Length: 448
Ligand code: S3P
Image (cartoon, rainbow, N blue to C red; front, side, top):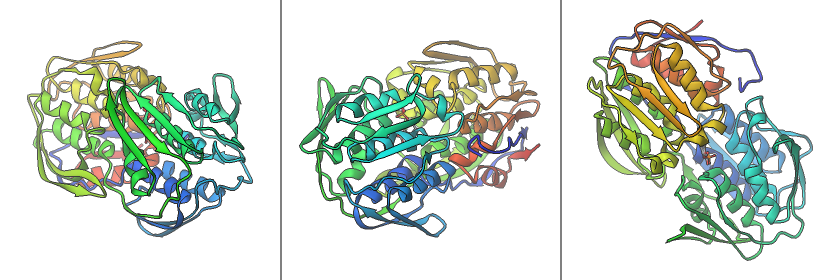
């Protein structure tokens, strides 16, 4: 698991209609944040619906190492007794955050303005990913970072003893970097300002306000200007984690490409910073009904009724939509393969620094399945073969990347011949019930 354990090869094959209800687990981004913000509040935060995937469990372990009391009471039901802003103690050992870029980057931000030292490591995937994007702004607060070449883990962060507030314009559209700076700003005096040209997921801003921080967002010609007042006393909260739209994407896309399918996916976030895939699918001609719109856990959600869609058309995905669907391009490229015409995904170079180089992983895997693709540094183009037109019959390499593994297992449900993945174990990081949930809908997925 998380690239530390044994590889688990898996296989999927052409399946009959998918039917039933797909209740996906809690949102990964909100789960990480509820543990981290809970650890920075004084008193007891109660969390329900927490995603119990390995990434989030690794963050829970890290919060304990900093002195918070984190307790599981039942499935998805957790409490965090926090130590307050600036109250983190120095961890006694190296923090292994597994596969999680979100865990690594947010936690680095959280401790960077406290006078303690922490050393971070992770699995083989995380140790390849760039951390300079967070340590650059953290150094402006006065923190120091000592890592491997290229700003890679293992890395030691020495927190600033006398942090100063920062004004920082994000050079990349990244919610992780934005959140790391805001979290560092919590323990700096005065106002920390983050400017983002393109809006990215806004869970940190929403939740910080919920925990009692003074934060406001102004929309200007420069983009979103987020101003946070440092050194607040955060109040513990009751957090109901909504279901994860990025996990929901897998059963939704499977139902769209498996003939005769008709499923219900309840409580899928319609947060405008997360719903780009759903807009794109509708534009491609997907039969998705957005039923019962409401608010859950502070997020707008709807129940999605999704039916097989035999006439999907490839489109040009607007590049400015990328931040709101950044984790969904792998599964979109599978849907594109079962559509008519070309699907063009531009402005997606961030995919190259995710859990794997996702442009390369999808391009190679789809090619092996008999699909024509084109790519450059910042673009992926998939030539659709129509419903049932993908040959399959190949093994895709997942490169310790949960979303690559799930994407190819979905591909195999509608391809002519079975599709295998070399390692399905990373699925545990974000969607531990994927196999059982998909089988329950009628998907033929097996371990091989
Ligand atoms: C996340 C932000 C995104 C996303 C990741 C979760 C977050 O990363 O890919 O899965 O919770 O803030 P970037 O901020 O690097 O784009």
